Picture 1 (cartoon, rainbow, N blue to C red):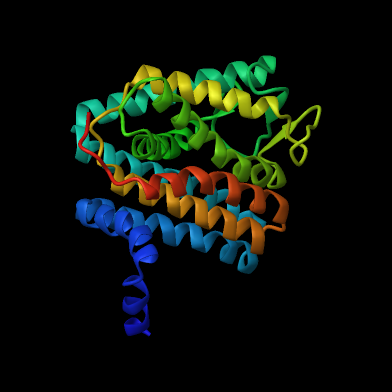
Picture 2 (picture 1 turned 30 degrees about the horizontal axis):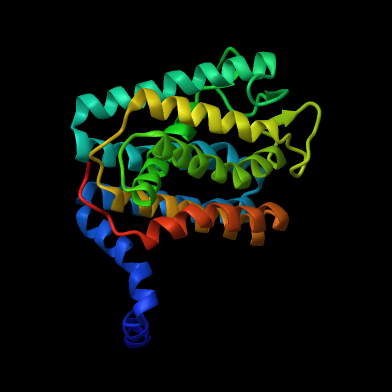
Length: 271
C-alpha cells in the first residue's frame, strides 16, 4: 500500500497538490505538529462520541475542538512573530469579533437577526466567550490562503480574498451549528434557513479585522494545512454524519475554490 501511495505521489498533478502540505509540515515545529494531530483526532472523535455517548458529548467536544484548533493557529503565529505580537493579534481578533457578535445579536447588524441559545457557556452580553476563538482559529489560515493567491501581504485584493476565504467556511459552519441548537435565526433565510446578509456580515467583519491586524511575514504552509483539514473534515462530517448533504456540497465547492487556487500558487518571496 505504501508503495502505491509513493507511486501515486510521483504523478505531477498529485505531487503539485501534495507539495505545499509536505513543505508546510516540514516547516512547522514539533509543538505545532503535535497540536495539529491532537486537534484533528479530536475533530474525528466528535461524531464517534455523539454516536457512542450521545448528544451530551457535544457539550465537551465542541469547546475542545475550538480551543484545540485555536491553539494550533496561535502556535503558528508565535512561531512566525514571537509571543508579544502573536498574543496581541489574537486579542485584537477576539475583541473585534466579540464586539461584532454582541452588536449583531443585539441589533441584527451586520449579520441579520439571530441570537445564541444557552448551550455554549459562559457568555458575556449573550455572546458565548468561545465564539471569538472560532474567528481566531480560521482567520489566520484565511490570511495564508490569500497570501498564496494574491502573492502579497496587504492591499485591497489580499483583504478581499482573506474575507472571502473566511466567509466560505461559514457555508459549512452555520447550518451545522443551527442544527446543533447553538444559535437561531429569527427570520430564516435563503441559504438552508440562514439569511444571505449573514455572509455579507462575515465578509465585513473579516475584512475589518484583517485591515486592523495587518498580517505579514507568516509561513503560509502550516496554516494552509489547517485550512485544508478544516475544509475536508467539515465536508466529510456534514455529508456522512450530520445529515446535511446540501451545505456539505456547497461548502465543499465554495471553500474548495480558494484552497485550490492557493495550492496552485507556490509561496513567493514575502513582501
